[in-house]
Image (cartoon, rainbow, N blue to C red):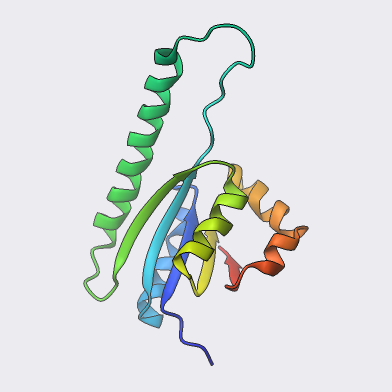
Length: 140
């Protein structure tokens, strides 16, 4: 049996992702909380002053990072090594990129079902990318 050293928890920042913490503690694995920010939409035509999208996009990034930091503080378990990562893009491919980059041994997808992660699960279920990912997945 392969040891699980790192659990990547892809989260929509809802409480549904919290069970990954207990799995990491029980397995003695490092826990990485990953949140994927969707790309900020920019109108395809005409002039769009950069400050009209840059400020809201930076605000969304600050808010997401603050949420991740809050989760890490809330975890507060010295027996679990935990960190967070915030990336931007389309959720499914970015999660898979990070799984490969980090060499995660287990992926936990935590979602309340009303956000982009619900679409990720549907995408992954019918995707060859699911099969090509080197880590097993579980949905919480």
